[in-house]
Image (tube, rainbow, N blue to C red; front, side):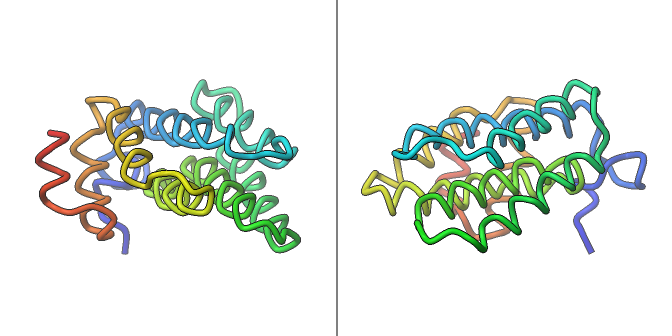
Amino acid sequence: MRDKKWVAEHRGGNLKIEQHKELMRWALDCLNHLLPLLKNGINEKIKNAINIGNKWADGSVKTGDAMKASREIIKFVRTLDDRLEIAISRAAGHAVATAHAADHSMGPVIYGLKAAEIAGRSKDLELDWQLHNIPNDIKELVLTGLLNKKIINEDIVKKYT
């Protein structure tokens, strides 16, 4: 069962629609930050996920459209061989899946750290960028979620609160 803090109010949880949209925007920001790592360009599935995620956040597409885009990426990832493209594509799938389940917004953090490592970049710098860019109105929720998933520890939570 999902933590009610991550469940939308209209589904019986505590998450306000504006927070949910903010989680989507932040997840997409984290994803966009990874895109320069792709040496062979951005695949169409990622572009579509970003487009659909942005449209969901502004209210112009339905959650079902975002879920479809996420499923398309999951299917697409199975065809890939490049570890970096896999990690970033998975980050895109989780970002757009945020429309359906808000805690998917943490996926770009998890896969962003993997992408940074694969690319020979600092995981600490990537995490710092991601956490530094969490909007204030969702900061506690995200930090607690990442702590519960054991992505970060108490010292990191203290640093960013």
